[in-house]
Length: 291
View: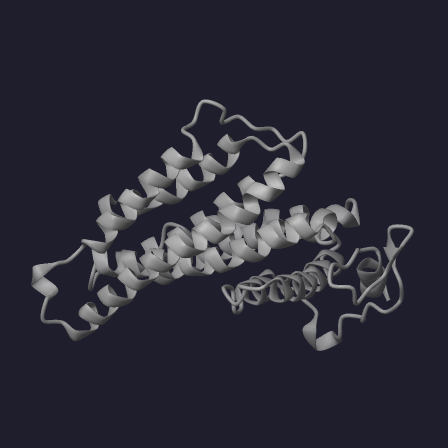
């Protein structure tokens, strides 16, 4: 019964639960015993499950709601205290400690650490969207276009990491780190994407200048080729795929910037805020190649 009470105190995003006086109706399902999350390891496994199957608004909302139920289960079963509406931050302290404990050990542990970090950042972005913006068409369009861009960036960064360090176990660590970077960068951006946000990037280049830099970095990535692996079929295939995804990034970035511009103009968000995000995306390419 305690789990049901916790779940009922949370607002839903996808319309399956209806908010009434900041509480939801009894349409919220009780967490079944076999899906209760008393163990931190079990919660972590659930959070990172299908971590990148998140390229549409519908998937974002569905994933957020199922993860919220899991977080509520862990929060209640472990006797956590505080405001139920802030339970994610309380639970994430435990998940962060777990991720930190894994970050200096085996390749698999370091990859897992990156995935846990990525899952938490994704959740927090989805939480901002669902709590504040899901009914606003401008925010809907911006998020929809970002999810498509993010999905392609994820693949591109991963391929670039593997190609740069072909055959080395560090490639998996760099790839996982890039995923965590992408999720964290987006969350930091999105948490300020509102009227009156704390924009500290007024001295940065314009969007046009940031785009020029990103285009140059993408061109440099596409020119990557290691003669030592020229005869490796799998290397050649991934190189071809990476170059194709670099081209897709350009197209999807243009689409996202269009919806982003409409949102920012309506909310009075300065151009430099978007330019800052684009700059970080290009800097990550340099980081991967020169790591």
